[in-house]
Amino acid sequence: MAGKGCRLTNYRNKIHARIPEPNDNVTMTMGNKTVVDAVFSDTGLDGFLDGLKRSQGNSVAAETAALVANSVEMTGISVNRIDRILEEDVVREEYGLDANAPRSVYRTVERLGENSDAIVKYLGGVLKKKYGVKMDTVFMDWTSLFFEAPQQGIVRVGYSRDHRPDRPQVTIGLSMDRESGMPVGLTVNAGNILDVTHFEDTFGQIRHLLPEDAMIVFDNGAYSRKNSALLDKEGVGFVTRLQLNTSDDRFVDKHRGDWVKIDDILSYQLIEGNLKRRRYIFRNEKLRADVLARYRRKAERDWEEMEIIRKNIDAGKKPRKKYRNSNCFVDTRLSYMFPLDCFSKEEAIDHAVERMVTGREGLFVLLTNRPLTAEKTIELYRARNQVESAFRDLKHGIDWRPARCTNEMAIKGRILISFLALFCISMIRFLHPEYRGRTAESICEELGSFSLTVLVREGEPKRRIFSNFVPLIRLLRAKIKGKMGGIRGNQTRLDVF
Image (tube, rainbow, N blue to C red):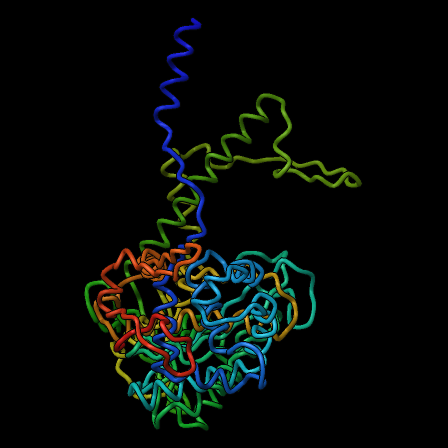
């Protein structure tokens, strides 16, 4: 056994790689930085940001680029993590920052928050003037971002889209242009603000960008008579979804044979309303089938629970706590009846499904203040998925949650950093259509492969070696250029974007 153990030890030693002598070389990802630098330069955002700084200190544009590039690279941005990265001299040098950067980035985040609206409006103007983004149709949507902190300032408990009602949050409004897929608006409000109240801020931010007879598409949570009157007053069209009401039920019941067919799945009825409103009631057979299937699954689960309850009662056991009163101060006598003994399981489930049916299965209502056809109306509403995809990119690709800062300006700055990361990724999709179908996560993963290694040897000049030129970097024609726009010489930029 001793000999066998010795041979095994020798074998283990052989499969270990030989560790070389330690050195001071530094390797960092450069794909995200390359794209961020290019977008900042081409939009002129670097010059705009540097106009926000005081006379001394680091460039605000350079610090913001570091924050945005690392926001794209990391799973969840943390300024604390970034300041640790910037403690490395070589990394700071690549970003064009001095030794104060690990401390000054915190102030930069607050400065970005203080100027969040101005930065977003500037980018919207650049998209319109330089890139010809028309913004004829804009999608608006709202979400929430929860915090690992107590309630304070705008961080408030409210309706949570993240399914975290136990955490305080802020609400965020996002506007996106349909044709280009570019984000054009960002608003941040308190966590207890509803979409219907937040709507005015989000619309007011982008109003100056909209042409005459523009179209806004949003969900039913932001609809109200006040908001629709605001859009009418501004001469802006809209498409939104509404909840069915009892008058819709009566109309559908009265006009059962009047459905106009669009295709094998979709049909509609039109109600001409006041103020030139068009109210379309759509019937989707696939949606109806999905709802009925959900009813059946619920009935099957309920049948299985019923069988468990009956088995326990027949055995003289107490039912599970969820099926009885658990209040220690209340003595409740519960009885259970099983009225479906005369039915088989399938017959009982069919009967339960019939009782669940309301007549609204597969029906939904879209409202517009323009003379749009049913086909055009539903096409616009379905395209609203773009803004929901943007939120998915922010929450999963860029991963802006959960946030930990509590200062209001720092919160807005931190959210703006994630918005700028989304803006940079959207620019790739906008200017290079072959990337339109790619998720933010896959684009970030590809960019993260492009790396720079700085060889540091005592008594020798530093050498910079780029590697892993992924297809996206090759497409963007990454090159090393000289000093430009106040950025440190030798810094990586794009030749053209």
